[in-house]
Length: 269
Image (cartoon, rainbow, N blue to C red):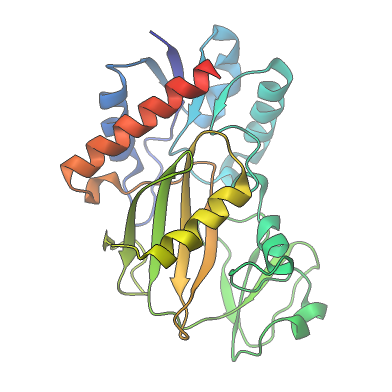
């Protein structure tokens, strides 16, 4: 039976989410198909030499809180050929927020983003702008202002959009699993099931294709703009929270089956 090192911070105080509960559930299901050992993200590098078949990064919290340890783990995993799930080739949040700038430049349906106040003219005019650290996560350091400022290359600037709601699409490998949305924009993590249209899935799947991850779990976060179209908010490909506790049992079970099959395929690749 394959041996997995499962990386999680069970005690991380996520706002509106219960990281520990989700990973207790997932590991309770996966242990019938894999031999599992759990560890904190700051301990993962030291355990790489123990010979696990793969390291599975799950609800490990914002990398900003343990940047040095994560960078060292990543470098060691790459140098030793350690299998990491999700693979370390992700182009989304795993690699920082540069992808928001790249997707803006490429004309993808994303909230327009710049990283230099001198380029404000490139954004649609707005009464206020969102400004956040380029290396931030989980809304850490987010502010709203009509006059954005900050060091070029170290911040992200986006027009503040009065969107109707946020919606998240969840994938295992390139296969859509389920969608959830927050009807109240002020309550991001009060989610309910969402039935996506074909156009919604075309939107979300385009970013999965752009990311080119061979295996793994991804969450595509979007907002419904006033004009009706979806705009990308975030492509989470490092440790996306899955809100499994909000799903019907049959959808949860189907997700676990898909994740287990993906892991087996990943190990055999």
